[in-house]
Length: 314
Image 1 (cartoon, helix red, strand yellow):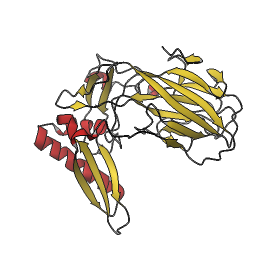
Image 2 (tube, helix red, strand yellow; image 1 turned 30 degrees about the vertical axis):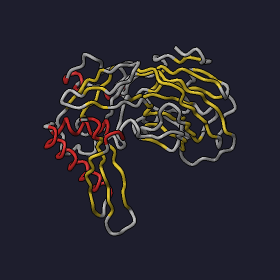
Image 3 (spheres, helix red, strand yellow; image 1 turned 60 degrees about the horizontal axis):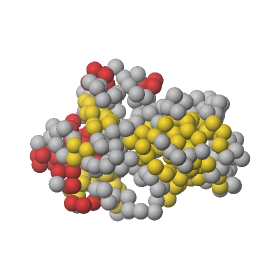
Image 4 (cartoon, helix red, strand yellow; image 1 turned 90 degrees about the vertical axis):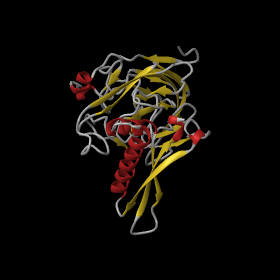
């Protein structure tokens, strides 16, 4: 419960995409704080008792629901919405899956796999991964944005210049996000909350977890942003840094190939060091490992690195 919130938007008030013609669930004034009750990215289809059969029968027409939209008084095209992320109210459970046809190594991991997570929603202590290790948690919102100017219904899956499914781990409590407004009222929505994710979300899912989130929405007139930007005021990896990292690399003229190779080598390393199956290592990499471009100037070859936090197995 949010005692400082001006409004609450309930979980049932959601959409499965972006559309400038969606009726607002709420009209808010700049500077107001709103509690958004968000669903997980499965739209509640994958719960604590889910099985592999649940994943196989997943209705993809109901994935990534976003709560809203909120019409912001005075918001006009050319303005920016200033969204301050105040607090998360986690549910204590979530899931990670390998979904056939989805993920950086979809051509190699063709069979479905599912892991159900449970965690302490108060202490947010690292959560045990069944095959081995404990993953530090950092709640954030994966999908957050405003309506695009183009008419019609737009998929919620790809990120856009107005935000959307960006899956940026650092959009956590304390961050301030600026979104370019393209339609009158902005029509802001949020969802796809996560308990933890690595930069890259390499298998396509993180710890997908239903949460409520408190946001303060303000307005910056005539900001003329071309794409979202955000500010963080604290270190962003200290939940992972304590024991250092194992790092693998991919080197060559193509960044996507380099990313795949760095990830494949980390999966191999985790299998050797900790006895994980390849798919378990793949999913674990997705929730806590980071893809980084280490070098992109010494042509013709670039370096992509995959950082895996040693604290998971400390």
